[in-house]
Length: 512
Image 1: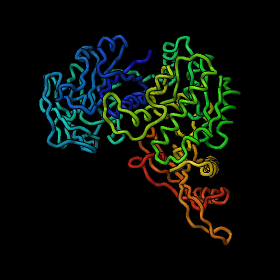
Image 2 (image 1 turned 30 degrees about the vertical axis):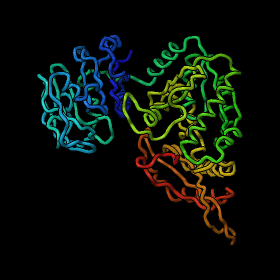
Image 3 (image 1 turned 90 degrees about the vertical axis):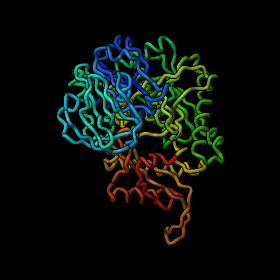
Image 4 (image 1 turned 120 degrees about the horizontal axis):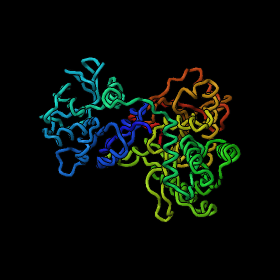
């Protein structure tokens, strides 16, 4: 069993990022609810504990607290932001509302490096997000770094191996933050750094077997990376107990259904049921223009088709989904974090009670790049593992406004050309995502000395690591010119192609 670092979740939007950074250091991490008992952590053999940030204030009576016994387990503890304030408040120090809140970039001045800040310069740019601060340290602690508005931005009790920091080392905005995390893991927790994705496969397979037992599982297979990896992982764990259902909702890319049938039915020999339901979805979406309404209708119809399709399978106990962590944190409040809804994802959250199925989400704690690595470990082809993300609602959120068959046909052909040219040029594998968006706007053009009044296609190509942030990709003009020329010449109904050069944030990757 690999050494495990426990991350106690107090509701921060960065909790999973902390866990991911730990894995990047080849150390296994596991997220636990904030109130997990010390005995449970001891039983699991954790070698270190990280207290995440969170939206609450330790000054509030009902704010979340960890089991006080974790500080007596004898394993190192690191508190980040809210975690630092918990350490100060629970171990006898004093915390107060800061007169100058720190949100965003700050400058960290290092007074004493110790093991936590070993090898780092005396000044670092860091990322802050807090409104409270520690003004009196508990007995045995010392401040080793400060920021403009906090004299105790990093603290330590080197004898008890308890550390805290006001800034977030896990985010990319904190300069050399990964080195701080590595110092905690290797220099303080004595982690060997020998964890690999193959270890995760073994553990995930065992977890699935323990959870499912001899019951049957239904998986909604789209052919995208997430559901494909989920299918391969679950199939490895329980074999013929898995049945995959592919819903052709009429909102797919060109030849998508045929490709999925070939790959999973013929190559993987997975029990695959196909529901051809395009007309049904389009009828339900007729006249609907609001993005959230479209997503909800597609999700609702998806569930209905599922209910009808699984009747042919027989009794099943679990519905598996390829939900990833970025989907979760954009859709729901995590661990009490009252984050604003950005957009709903039809594969996140609870199921209708009438379905009487338990939810199985084996990828829920992973980011996209980790899922790709998992797919390769499971033996999936590179072409499948490195496919660009495709939204659950499909082209339904890439046709702006009302969805019509005519619009979908235009978008499919344009998108097919874009992906062909991205692959031909070698840029498909260099970017995170490339796709077309149909704009229901007609503009004047000239073709063959004749006036045209046709639609607009927007090209969206972005670079990203985990879909949490993204920037538009700088594709050579010659490639963009070829893409534009081919779409206008080959796709009937289009006379203009535009390029989306916005980043996330403030924009999202998808337009709807």
